[in-house]
Structure formats: C-alpha cells, structure tokens
Image 1 (cartoon, helix red, strand yellow):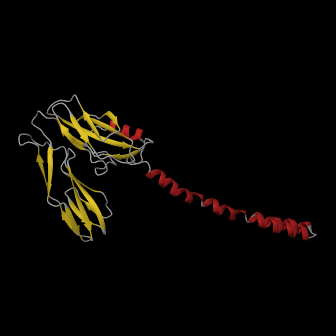
Image 2 (cartoon, helix red, strand yellow):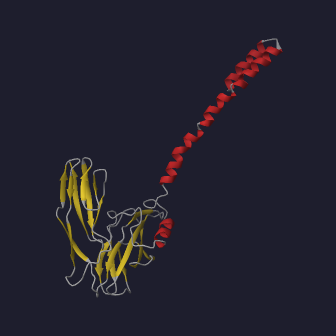
Image 3 (cartoon, one colour):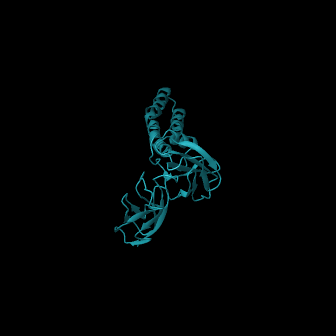
Length: 263
C-alpha cells in the first residue's frame, strides 16, 4: 500500500495540473478494499490454536492435579476414571490381612509423588495418602470387606504422569477373597497383520473357601494400539509390524503380561 501511494505522489509532483494530481490520489483509495483480504484470513490462523487448547483439557497425563483430585472425589461410582491406564503403574494388592491392605505398583522415573485414593467399595473416594515410594498400607479396615483404590502419579511440577485403573481388594476374615494368580493360554503371541488371536484366562483364588466377588471381569489393555489392539473379550488384532505388550489383569491388580509380535 505504501508503494502505491509513493507512485501516486510522484505523478502528482510531475504534473502541473492540480486537478490531474487529485485524480491520481483517488486511485489508492479505490484499492483500499484489497488490503482487507489479509484481515479476513485472520480467523483461519486461529483455528489450530483453538483445537490444541481443547485437546489439553482431557483428564489424564499432563492434567492439573487439582482438576483430577476434584474429578475423583466427586466420583460416585466404582468405574474407572476416564484417561486412566493399567500398564503404566500396574497397581496391585501386595498383601491382605483382616484389618489392613498393602498395595504396590511400578515406579515411574519422572514421578516424584504418588497420591492414593481409596474407600469401601460402593462409597465415595477419599484422599488417604501421598507417598514417595511405590508401596502403601491402608490400616484400620473391616474384615471380609472389599475396598477400592486408585493411584495418581505426579511429577515435580505437580502435573499428572499417570492415573491407575481402579482395583478392588478384599480384607481377610470373610466369605469373599482375592485372585492369587491368572492362568493365560499364551504368554507370547506372533501374528501377521490383520490376523486375530483370542486370549483365554482363568482366575485362581487364594483359597477354595472364599468367593471372588466380581466388581469387574478380567480386563485387557494394549500398551501400543498402533501395533495391536485387544477387545474387552481378549481378542488381539494385529495392526502393523512391531512389538507390544497386552496386560491381562484381575480386579485386584494381579496381572500377566503377554508379549505380542506382529510380522
């Protein structure tokens, strides 16, 4: 626009007729609407920003701990929290007594603290501890009762690194008990792209005298869904060449890791 005005002024200076000069200055004015075009494109440059901001709102890795804390404490059911995973923490029961339950999980390198939420199954969560180690013992519990737990790993800035799947653990002294181990028909699975394989799983209780009250069925999770996915019924589907693990886990966190290779 500056160049157009400069040319017009030069013409005006050369011509002796002032009327002619006035006519040349009108030309840039008629071209002003052309400068509006870049302005109308401004909204298109904002679209990616809006999308990226929306994607960071989801609960899960990278979320603010305060938001996750409110979400868990306001949860009125015994379902997994959106954004939670099993394979990152692998929270499971370490030991169960009549009035105490000990938990253990994988230590994440970037995690500085672990927040434990728990309650009797069917009731609202409470924030019961914050620890720096990979174990925790919940005491003063009732015998023969199921309790639920969830662990949230935080980095040094207080951002969420991982949210565990909900686990259900029974104290001793009642008619209900816990899974001791899982029997899976395969520990290694080799598949070609597009092929499927069904995992068959059996839960073994710690004692024949107790029943495994199922708050959840045996669950499955792939740690790399680009390589292979697994259904709720344990059917693995090969997607592309590579390796991954499928976690098979019981309601108390006892699990088996199945190695999957896609050729």
